[in-house]
Image (cartoon, rainbow, N blue to C red; front, side, top):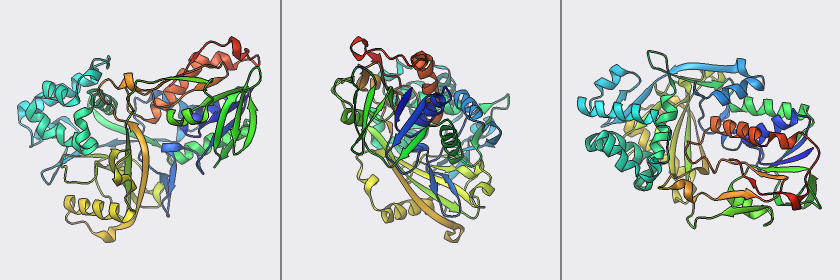
Length: 451
């Protein structure tokens, strides 16, 4: 079959590689100048690395299997990592039980309740009841008000600002459940991994495989319209030219789907409430000396202008990054926040002042370069009853499919969930790609959109 895939992120390329391996002729359309979407890479001058920070956890079975399937299993690298907490102008380790017990801001009783909350949260399997409870109310009930005020509230403010008051408990559940799985063995040591060379290695391998299969990836193109073909199949208008395909898979966001898909192709159920998105401003430091011993340094001080400090070089050998140490400073805001559109000079000044507040002895000569990256829509704000307000696309044509990340209603957005969704797509729809026979559009029943 001739198959068109709209979107050249990890989801689109994973689909293309799987379909190409079954001898289909696949064409991927991507508006950006390089593939990857949020997982793409950035030229930092002396080295190339991920534009935003990504990590692989030992529990990321679908992603680890995928990396192996495309021939990069030997390039996986694992490292023991540490977690820290910054509060009251001091740094505290929270990587093991002893450090947790010594954590000064909380009393022994508060630590006990906090530990029970984390253990309880990591074992909850039914997330739907959490969707109806505000995260603030749930954490106060489980951890106590003192623990909430001293530990959880500063973290929520750093991550969400005042918006945390509208967010459901699913937010903290999905966050804890994923990070808790980074701890392995009886010693409960944290382990995190990456593919040598970063996600650029992954995307270059996917591009190579797709090309060897006879597929093509078109970059810098604009998909203007997707419509049904005469009788069966699909038509895609790209930069004014119409091309025909047996099937089309759309992997972009729902707002783009509304713009490009003919009305007869898809029905989108609307709740009347708009989905709000978080964007991110991510300042990246390339330094000559290690900046932090922690992979994740959580910040419990709302005066600091960034959400946390991500020490990528605690898991990535500096030989992969030009002999420099890479540190990410993310700040999450609503997608309509003016800060997302502030000039780089303003971001630079704010974040540097925050660094000086945390690290008074900071030597600017140790910084080789500073880079500022932004993304307007990173993940949805998981408000109360979020799953009921997400637009639910259902395709009306047997040859048109929708698969995107908008429907990750009970998970944090990460590459493991992307690959899990691709795997589920082939379980549910793989048989429809096994034959050239195509059912007439008039006989097609609504096909669920797979997310």
